[in-house]
Length: 119
Image (tube, rainbow, N blue to C red):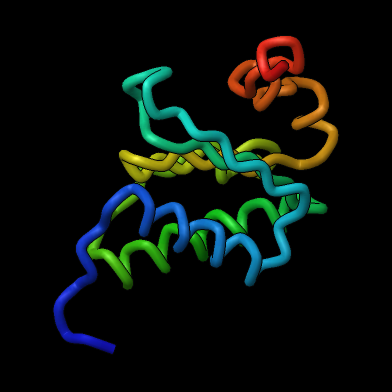
């Protein structure tokens, strides 16, 4: 590995996020392109963990990997309860849910284009 940290573009961050989530067996990963829709970030990723423990673990490992690879400290909220953890990297917003909590909030439905708009 190179001694200098990799320059983080939103696309590289997204790739690192998706790789980390895959490594930690996150389920039902949905990637949403936010460019041109909002200023909060370029991408949103929503996924599930099977338990509160897995949700917290997925989140902790993701934050550590981003710090190691890019030297970027991500903000983390909600890890204590493990129901819904928000990881804000600046360009990529990640939501890790327990399945029941994800179903209740249906967050990705707010951001994905509707079927009618896609036709």
